[in-house]
Amino acid sequence: MKNKSKLKKIKEKKTTIAKFPSQWLFVAKEEVTARDVKNALDDYVGIELEIWEAAGIVEVVLSDGRSIDFEQTEVDLHDAYSNEFLAKQQAKALFYVTIHPDSADLVTPVMQHVLGKIAGVFCGDTDDFSPFVRGEKKEKATG
Image 1: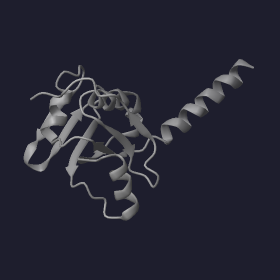
Image 2: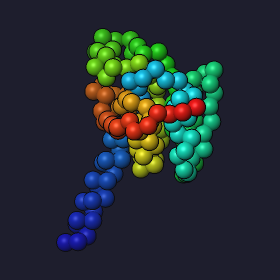
Image 3: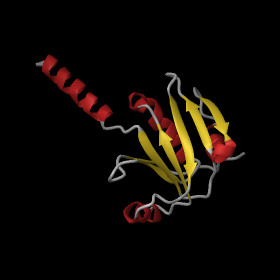
Image 4: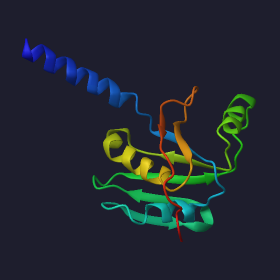
């Protein structure tokens, strides 16, 4: 009996990981730049940061060697449905975020750390914008 339960848990875990997309959006409720995202992560332990400010790109290298890439873009997803979603989220800045799905356990805490300093939401770059990673802003990112 125990083996069946364990197999079921493994299967559920694989299904969960498979549903964690590699393409995300970071919808900020504040006017922020790549520099602000980098500053929000300066005190996060266990990562390395690199910024290409002119390009609006921040690379976050995780402890497993994989990365999270933030790329700032205009607050316009070029279709009415998506732009209505951005309006509901009170978007003032928008970043495309690329991750490796196998790093989900390391990525989610980084996303929540950013959300502790910059008001907004991370959502999948999917048809229904799911899944969501939400957080609560606790302090201002300084720089």
